[in-house]
Amino acid sequence: MADSKDQEVINGDGPANETTTLALPEGALDPVYEAKAQVLNNAIQEIGMGWYQWQLFIVIGFGWASDNLWPIVTSLILTPVTNEFAPSKPPLLSLAQNIGLLVGAIFWGYGCDIFGRRWAFNLTIGVTSVFGLIAAGSPNFAAIGVFAALWSVGVGGNLPVDSAIFLEFLPGSHQYLLTVLSIFWAFAQLVATLIAWPLLGNLTCQQDTTCTRQDNMGWRYFLICMGGLAMIMFILRFFVFTLFESPKYLMGRGKDSQAFDVVQEVARRNKRPTSLALADLEKYNQRGLQQGTDASAALRRQLEKLNLEHVRALFRTPRLALSTSLIMLIWGFIGLAYPLYNAFIPYIQATRGADFGDGSTYITYRNALIIAVLGIPGALLGGVLVEVPRFGRKGALAVSTALTGVFLFASTTATTSDALLGWNCAFNLMSNVMYAVLYAYTPEVFPTKDRGTGNALTATSNRIFGIMAPIIAIYADLETAAPVYVSGTLFLAAGAIAVVLPFESRGKASL
Image 1: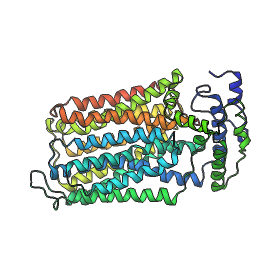
Image 2: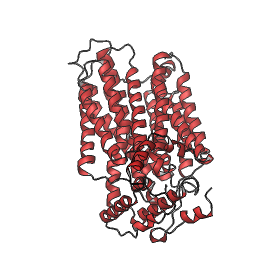
Image 3: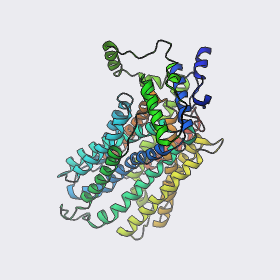
Image 4: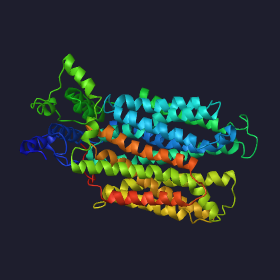
């Protein structure tokens, strides 16, 4: 814990002499960093939620949408791609995607703590759009697998980077908006389904027939539409919206004057006054921690980028280590549970004698559309639940995750198309609540200077476990019920873990 002098520094006066309750306990981090983070929290709170943050809310939403959109794209094109190229192991496409997501989470997540948020923010969707468009011309299964991995490198960086950026510009009073952002995640599922319906529904050759490229152009047109949509998002981000580097990131790199300039510019755009002065930050640089400016200091800083200091910082205290470990475990369990369910549920339904009635294209996509629509109120419900007193983030996460597992188990009992639709609607509603809360809670409990790394660790855990699912689908016996029940159990276990998370971030500003 910090000593008494540290406590004085931490509780020093900030703009307007305000104090903001922090998401992490005092003494968990470097006290000088904590003090400056408090000053910046107060400055952002003083400026309030304004035009800049609402614009940022929209363009950050593009990243949330992309994170859900492209895995859905992969799942939707798998059947027509398999029909056309007849690969011996179709789940390899999902494996390629998950490997790309893992690489992206690691590269962009860790990288944004080193080279900053701006470049990562602008390039992730750009990479996705380019390789998504190129993939439409794939001549064989190997090519589409490679391009799926490459577009997924961009997708994998969206949430680690975007959540860090948004949280660092949000006043503490509006951090619930990080949960509401998941409405973009749900809306992406709706958009993908609407576009896929006419293209994949009408321009896909049927199974057990000779499938030629000319008869199977639907998935290629679908990729062009999705890649084009991502390109529009990239253009809006890069050329229309001006993203400022995070002031907390700049402060954490010793660039107090640049952090001050950013806060002043946000205040100007919001047409709100700020009492922040550069001296409010520089007064804490009296402990010999000023950043060096000579050539040797620059070299040392470059070498420091190669160490694991950002990782070690997330395990610096017992409570912080427990928090980081449990969040990684929750993300890992969910990362395995979802694809396991999707891979093995068809056998469960068949062995239970499920009668789905009309299997027409219309019924298939109509049901998919209804399920997708239910995701939107799920995201909004998550935004409400996280602010409920004595319930908060932890309660909302525990309940929604456990109910996701319950409805997953219940869906295996469906013996009619309507029953399966009902259970899947409930499953999608609760899973969207779960993801909305998890996406908000995770970055809130990581300090800004290590937030990209913390997000990368959780995303990496999620992607590593996710890689296991297509491998299981390739080599395991598909005619078994066990994996679906394991999936439900993983959701229930993740819900139980959420109960014992050491930090509750409701009503507290993040460091």
